[in-house]
Image (cartoon, rainbow, N blue to C red):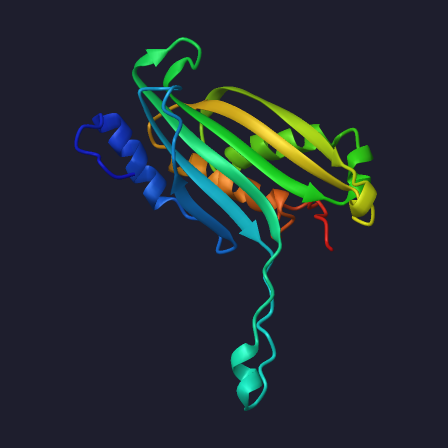
Length: 208
């Protein structure tokens, strides 16, 4: 979010809101290159959620203590949050801002047979925005299930299912802090991390 001297005031307000957004400790959030052809101004944030791993048991003394290495954490979910801004407004967006998002998480293979998986993922997004008071309109998106099967020398690998949700919506104002907070909660929900709203089950992610 650097190089802001020539940015419109409304977009600067939006960037300030993104910086103030609260997020859970399990999620890693950082700025990534934004697309340059979708709007005159844009900012993009990448998110990753990793499973917490216990610290390695260290020997009390001796050379082995310096060789103890913690295992690499398993990635539970990943995503991208893009904020677009056109000061002239867009008839397609029905506004001057547009949020474009992507979330992907790996699940247990048998979850791929659940015909309601996509609609559940979309419902989570709608509820997350509502719960955070992120007022918006003109929302749309797609949910995709991806089956990965291995053969030949890789046939011992278990089948996996990935769920992808691509969604976009138009914020009612330039105050987009609540929109980012809702989305980061959504990424954690995809990762199967509690706490969740009462009555909502987490997606069981794959464990090796």
